[in-house]
Length: 230
Image (cartoon, rainbow, N blue to C red; front, side, top):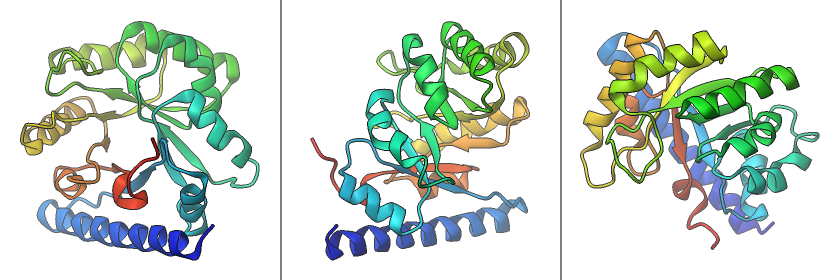
């Protein structure tokens, strides 16, 4: 690992964490609610050099989009970094449910009954403790994963009551061409209605806005690592 890469990633992490802390403090001052915010470093398609730089800097929570890529990157690191916490933040096919349950600590992309059932069966079979987030398609975009907002309450109840998933939060990815605030606000409303306190929302360009609407986890990639490897 080059010293330049190591220093750059460490400085980026420190800068982002400082912004997270300031935004969380502002949220507490406005609402009276102390809401710790987790930085999820999005490591998809990043080089091993950059990943090692983040680990050296103390980062332990990472987000991945693809199960197979994450297996190649993280399975062998589990033994060395015992405090790793991995979030699945990309679409999941039911035939990858077993692999996802075996690798990830948090699965943020539950958006349909078939997937919920497959994950529930695997969690029981593997006897793992997995945090589950329901992904809400707040913009109701046809090309994007996620349950429709109007269907979210019933789906959350199904996941909890019929499948037995440990649903602890919600996740969303707002439309790129729309003001993010209304999407973050909507996710917060759905969460409160269902007694959920964890909200995964906000990325490199808008994580401070997300924290202002109650985000408990922000997913940041390029602002930490730079451009992804193609």
